[in-house]
Length: 104
Image (cartoon, rainbow, N blue to C red; front, side, top):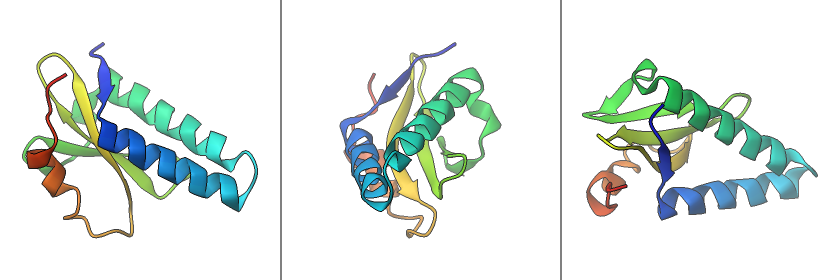
């Protein structure tokens, strides 16, 4: 299984979303984080199972939450470049392909 590396920008996305869910209902933030962790495990098992959004960038949905992990498959690791809400403009994540260092 190939390791999953979460870039700092994606970690910030996850933290912000978790805080938002915690404010909505106690323990909901923990459930959100569990869903994100489960998605990362599934990505590590079979990254090609997720559709390509643009070139080598793919999206793995989170179960029971309207978010997806945006990632790229690199030779040594799977690099998560962001977490995005399904209702956001899908082009927003594209700037991270060029501004975020994909090295593991």
